[in-house]
Length: 314
Ligand SMILES: [Zn+2]
Image 1 (cartoon, rainbow, N blue to C red):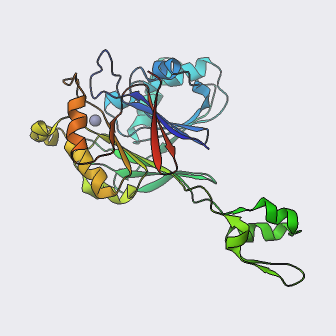
Image 2 (cartoon, rainbow, N blue to C red):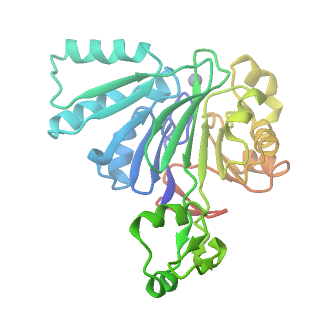
Image 3 (cartoon, rainbow, N blue to C red):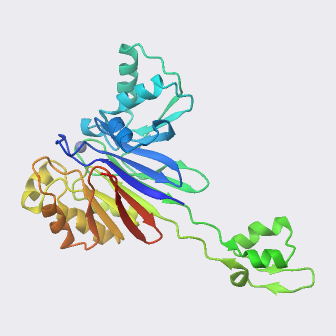
């Protein structure tokens, strides 16, 4: 059961020779969700050997170019590769007009269904749900309408112990009840307590994405106790005024949000091109939140129960 986040771009508005604009790929149990799609995102996906056609859902936080200028290129490639499956895009409503215009002037009639879901930047909302996963959007505080996203696994049912099933001939209709926590009474009237015949399921995991935003405590309620928080850290605290003016955050502010949210781990990204040495930003965040890491292009973060491990594909 996999839950990994791969950083495709960690730069802010302008790319550097080492950092692409924003993009990351969330793999929840082999369902692939692309979050933001800055210029070069499809090349990054290629570089790290992801199969483009596996992506079925794309979430765009806001309509600044460094978060979506790669989208039409990716859509075009999926079209040229003869995609058949639906592609779902979740973004501010204006993006639909932009995509439609780009398709019209390039005389492109997509060979696959593109389904657009407008996001709500004023209030938290469920944007995606299946049997095991839930994705919500929530408002951030940026110059234009912006949403963050939180990706979570649903709580899993208890697992019935195999030794019990081999001992007792349990009718099939009883199985869901036991998984949901019920005791079991067999035909002879013997009662099995649920705790003796089931095992705890794996803990459900979660990941929240906050980019771009100024310091915004109102968002915290949407990702309280999250396993892993990605928070933008465009600047350092000595530029707090500039950060505020531009509706961005500092590394210290990202760490403060992680602390107040009770996040288990924090990754910071969306670094201004002015910083060559990211260790300074990391040090600033670490003073406030001790489990902070840098999100650099090619980094992969794997959530295993309560822990996060970094696997770099750089
Ligand atoms: Zn922005």
